[in-house]
Length: 269
Image 1 (cartoon, rainbow, N blue to C red):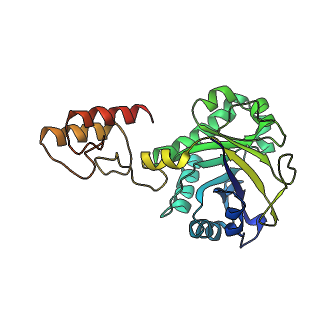
Image 2: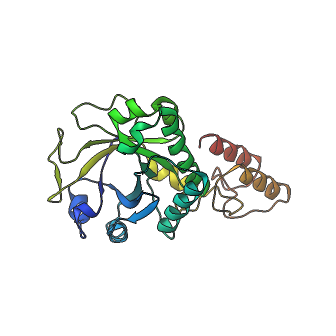
Image 3: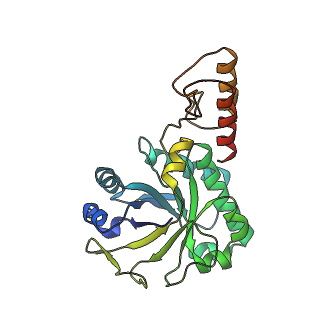
């Protein structure tokens, strides 16, 4: 699987022609929310416009925010998560929410500490219902992150402007921007970053009920697909209560096979 996509921000202007991008073969777009500099959030001035534009043109949508400070504390982590949650509210994203982590400020940190910063921020967002990951470029991942450990925990979006794929773990490869060895550097007549995704994120995210979607497996209707849904389904089974979600294996009946199917789905998350 290899799906073509782009990422855009205010630097591509206020009315990026996503209709033309779709015709050129691009199917997902990752839009910039903004970022954090000196403990202050700076919103991308076209984030809202880009989101509406992407929805209207039937793109699968992800989002990212940059972190340009050198450290965090518990309070700042809460502020970051709360701020991003506010920006994402009442929106749906079928691709992950990424932290853009490549700041010069963070090059003075140890690999362990950079991992700690990324993990602390992403776990806060993950716990509020988002599918999350990190973006950086290949050299940064190799030099300033414990990439092997981090990639086992989170989705990886890696930039390498080269004809060859990244040599670190990746699920999305940003293969070109202004420099592009595989394609023209323009999409819809505008210079922008281009990507290959190797994972069917929309299916996974929608099934899990993350990023603003409601999961078919969210039995207790709390907005998340977790072990509590197993308990809820067991109660429905014990009381012989059928709902529109209880037929997990879609065989037309509700019985213990559905409980087994739900347990399998949870193990696949």
